[in-house]
Length: 301
Image 1 (spheres, one colour):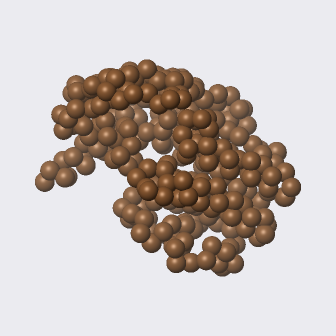
Image 2 (cartoon, rainbow, N blue to C red):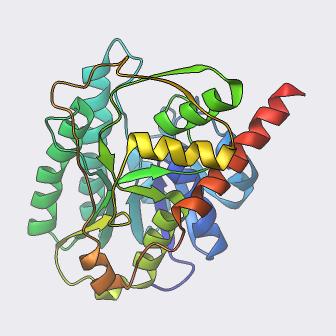
Image 3 (cartoon, rainbow, N blue to C red):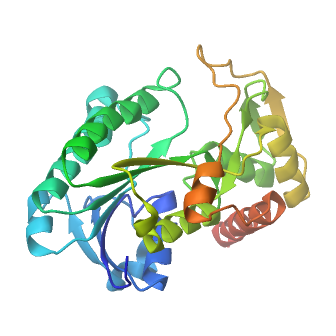
């Protein structure tokens, strides 16, 4: 796909979205983002003058397609189902109905490429992951019956700068800085921890090599190909911060269907796109911890 292609990006105000938006702009793509008028935009504050933006709670979604010749849709927006009394309806709307509507419009407006962002966790793990997997059935239908290439980017446990404080890794880092107790499960779960910068590079490489995608439905696993327990990962964070964490292991029970092991097989994305992670865990944590350290210092002033 040539430069200056027009990208429709959802989820741009989020963790991965803000990093990807920056990468797209730096690589000369024209970007249109979909958000809501009440979404916090601090992550993309310095980028807003360089993009076109639509508020979904104030604009009709189809108008976006009528007013712009879109080449590629990159769908990142998601709802994890936290902190809501109407969790079920909201999560279904965001994770199933919204991307299904995007695919319908992609077909109607002859957009040839749809990139989806997916979880590595099974449907039994969280309601969130069940809805994400349910959408894939709809995506498979559209890809099989229309002239539309669907690429599913399955991301393992991502970490990095500018993540939301309520998530596990930022919460851990902030509590270590503050000397606060961390209540955790047993910490035996093993995950494939991948730095956000490497994930962004996978998306950018995909855009440069869309001609390599030959199937209607393609799936790429994005991770390091290695696993580490949460206990060990926290030890790595302690080393990076140079301060011990106060962890109450076992204070939080495991989920009924706890996922104890998840690792990406990156051979396919390496073969098709030539992608592999470049940032070591040590460097990724230095970048991450450094950013949160600056946030702590700014907040204390």
